[in-house]
Image (tube, rainbow, N blue to C red; front, top):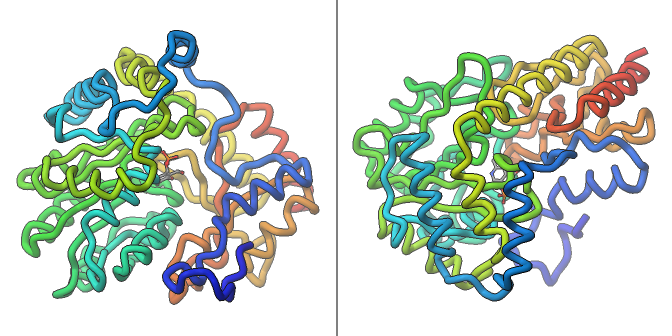
Amino acid sequence: MVDAQNSVLTSRLRGFGSTIFAEMTALATEKGAINLGQGFPDYDGPRVVLDAAVDAIRSGQNQYPPGPGIADLRSAISEHQRRFHGLSYQPDGEVLVTAGATEALAGALLGILEAGDEVVLLEPMYDSYQACIALAGAVTRPVTLRPPSYRLDVDALKAAIGPRTRMILLNTPHNPTGAVLGIDELRAVAELAIEHDLIVVSDEVYEHLVYDDARHVSIASLPGMRERTLVISSGGKTFNTTGWKVGWICGPANLVAAARAAKQFLTYVSSGPFQPAIAVGLRLPDSYFIELAADLSRKRDRLLSGLRAAGFEAYTPSGTYFITVDIRSMRPDGDGYAFCRELPDRCGVVGIPNVVFYDRTHEHEGRHLVRFAFCKREEVIDEAVARLMKVAS
Ligand SMILES: Cc1ncc(COP(=O)(O)O)c(C=O)c1O
């Protein structure tokens, strides 16, 4: 961990330490444990996408790509937004390619927020949100989603909006809870954003990982929202290429330009030969996206029933590739952090303590919760379950 008291660390980042994913993945490697912590698949994406990257490298696409991203990828992103969300974006000016969704978020937050602005967001939250908001000198106003249903409390959302609120940062499908915001919840958010003239940044990296009857709807497609919304996504989750870090932002030209102004001083550009490959992926037929979700939904059911059989109270996710469990049946003091630190030694499995996804003033909300990823081969899921069973017994 980075020492939170480190005197050379900027005060804006004190308390953030190093990300939990680095810590837990290092623990998994050190102990040879099964890593159900960090959200990356242990299998490759579609062959045609991988081949396109190899071809791009072999054909010399190895230098800086253009600042906004290569034209073919921007066109493919625009086509994808129209095909899946009915949204129309001009590849020139309304689409920006970034180093993963992480840089898209950083660009949007650093490029738009003033010091002292407030950002209302869903809690628990992906860990880069708070750090980027802090880097911008802005203030986080979390609205807590609670198990078992993790539905949005619209009154709490209303109460979180004040005179300094500049932005609502949404994430749906939602990491770590697996909640997928329903149309009524999205309409309520949209109504408040319009009433208070707020910008919405919508992190939709799990847009294709949705199960059962849940449907992912981009808030940008609701009336009056396109002009105030930046939609962020990434190829990592959809094409099992998390290491390629190809992300993007779509939105009205003025908002995209603000994000780009910050992004150009972060990486400037990235992932040259992977950009044409993600363009190939985005143009795959509907059957690819349908099978991706069907396969993950089978993996979800497998891990879910295994976790329940091991004795955890496990909440059914409607999206993403994460399951949250309550560990109190296994560890009555409910200390999820300690549980995750001990788990590799106790049984050779790694999970993520959900407490890291909560604001420090709300840690009690997530202290007893732990997240496991199911984007793993079936035999790996089965082995992880067998090991967790031993802890239970
Ligand atoms: C909600 C959410 N947003 C953004 C990201 C980062 O995406 P990328 O790897 O494309 O930077 C993740 C990765 O886990 C995530 O869960």
